[in-house]
Length: 428
Image (cartoon, rainbow, N blue to C red; front, side):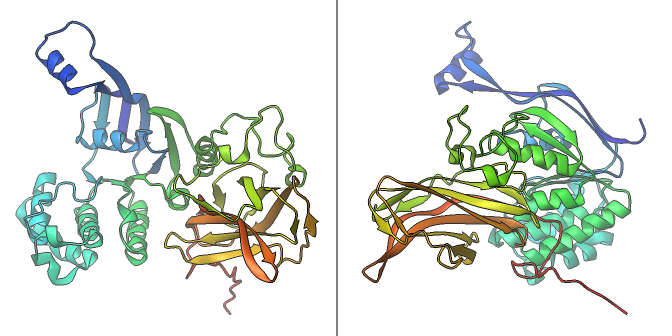
């Protein structure tokens, strides 16, 4: 069909996993008839069609096969079985530095990449100024690319990829390296491409960008195509998969209802901790004097489902369960949200909110819920939880979970800084 840019038909990619190197040698030399390996399906009978002019996102957890399918589409990898058809000149930005020679200067790599794509030197000459202006790396263009920072590297690679007039642009997580201004310039280019009727295939963990720019989203899971559809629908399903909650009736830390005001008990039919359904930080720092322990926690979206991924503007709840190991007078429950650099962005506690817990007796368990609207800039943040107090006038930390999990905010609106003022704008 003329309106199909990319067709993937029953494509599988199988890797042979050997227990030890000698097994690989035995098989290659035909020294044994037994099967010396296990088959791993990086892709398992994938079918998809991408129409001309579409911007299609491919999302999934690590190991789902996102990068593998893009490499097969672009010819970097060969599939084990199935067929791939590409109708149109394709430009791909798959991995930082793919196709670049570290010993060559930036200029030399521009010509090298252009030649590999199929352009003559004269055609590259015509596009060179646009490439240099977009990359904006100054005199470094005449230096070997092995001397470049990662940011300069991706600027040049992206500038080459989008200025050679492709009909199909494929991008795999490359923008996570550039600074915010360069990313904004790239997304403006995306919008220009969309208006020009170009086809874009976009793999990213930035779900806000996927939601904003993609017409359709394909969700992969463990090498299988799980679903495809509208961005919001697929992101919601991805959120459930992230915390193993993709069963249709698997609800949060409540008593089986959908209401956040009745979530004081776990679901007795599952007997699972709330945090078991969260994506936890394996390197979380846990410390405290021991008068109390934070034994469970979770983040709830506005439907009452446990998740690490929230939509900007939604109401959400941070919930923690604390067991007291001795009598404690006026304990303070707290949470803090930090950025990835460790800067405290926001937070609160029961003392600031004028909630007095009084004296809590040994053996008691308290559950506290902080409910608020999410008005942060889209991105990833880290959640810290604490139970503290004052003993003889001195501050004491009874239990603290430092950077216990990621809180990801999905937003399609850019702002300055990290907090949205939700301005109303009028022009007369």
